[in-house]
Length: 149
Image 1 (cartoon, rainbow, N blue to C red):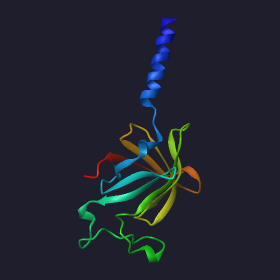
Image 2 (cartoon, rainbow, N blue to C red):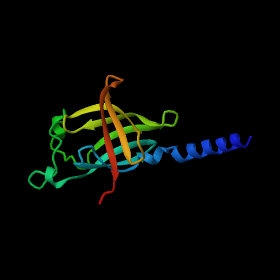
Image 3 (cartoon, helix red, strand yellow):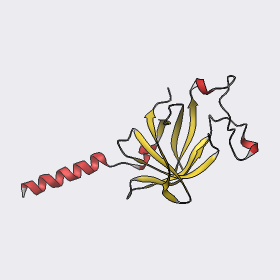
Image 4 (cartoon, rainbow, N blue to C red):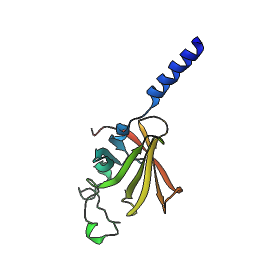
């Protein structure tokens, strides 16, 4: 009987200790190349991410790079810094992931469906962009939690 009680308490503790919250995704993240920082915030029940910093080595003539590959020619002169690249993510507590989102890749000018999850810990965010609604047909990346400074 004592063993069942201890097992029950341990299970409850582990579930609480390792459970994640929808807001765990919020914060500042380095992209996988450590060239830009993305701030993820909650807006109207969805999570969005905006590039808030780019390393100075990527600047051209003292200016942040432009969105040169955007399929909309009228947007090709906008700065990458300040660009929202992640949108519409919502948290699914059953799957413990953020899903239903879109991610924009400024390098290619393409937008993909995406979802995100924590595989290791809440300081390493895994994201996967995919096409045609097929999750396994895509590319994964990892962002690392950081600060703006």
